[in-house]
Amino acid sequence: MQIIKPDTNFDFVGKRRMAVIFSLLLILIGIGSLVAKGGPSYGIDFAGGTLVQVKFVQETKAADIRKSLESLNLRGLTVQRFGDEANEFLLRAQDAGEELESGEKLESMADRVGSALEESYPEINGEKQVDIRRVEMVGPQVGKDLRMKGLLAILYAMGGILLYVTWRFEFRFAVGAILALVHDVLITLGVFSLFGKEIDLPIIAAFLAIIGYSLNDTIIVYDRIRENTGKHLKEGLVAVINRSINETLSRTILTSGTTLLVVLALFIFGGGVIHNFAFALLVGIMIGTYSSIFVASPLLIFWEDFRDRKKQHA
View 1 (cartoon, rainbow, N blue to C red):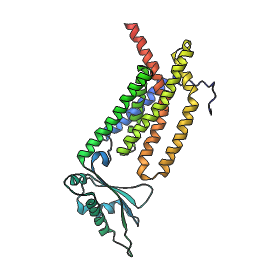
View 2: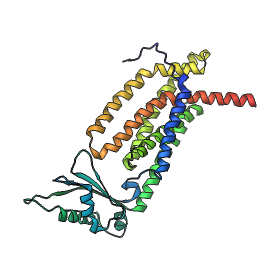
View 3: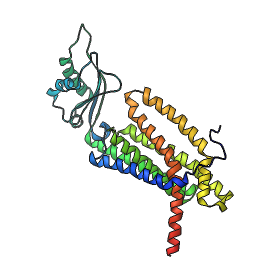
View 4: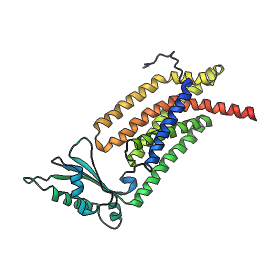
């Protein structure tokens, strides 16, 4: 199925300098946000502490919940609404992870929070007003270790991609693919910072999925470039790359479009638990599609221009 005519010839390569400016602007905005906020906002998985998901029968306010838990002296307590439910909240505290390392069990922490809330929200006609739905707890040292392993997972994935693409194509293709993937991850991370969303283990999984998705799209274009280089070498590299992007444009739009529909459904209907994961994929797929067209392929031209200038000065 083709939704773009085979003889279409959009000048994607001609817009490469504008694309570079646009990409640098997005990356700088993201980095600026990260610097202003003192780094990414880490979830319980990486920062350590405890997370409790609570649902109330009657509607309540975050300030009232915080007041109910004052007697527990939870350091760094934050209370925020969860998902679309008006009476469902996430409670986060920093020092529960330290208590866990000293021997306190997860059930004990849940009982303490539950008891404190039940005192402020007593039963009505024998019906409990508080329902503890989820409790997660991570020690600070464990969180630090998980953070390092998550970063290494991304670096190892990119290192493996660099070696594979170099072996399967050429080193210049590998460099272009890696720079495009770094571009995608940096922009997605910047968007997370701008929207104040937390980075946790599911988000690392989303980053790895973004890397795989973006690479797949880039490899399709690279393979067509290599094929067309043999057929249309006399046209020059710029024309060959532009031809290759146009020839794979239908496939790119169809694949990205159908994937975005699925991820958008997850984002809207998937619930609060996978909301951030779906959001990361949503941003990553859009940026990955853009980078396959406007970043990965034009980087080959910048590479060739650099080599030509180097030869002239030699």
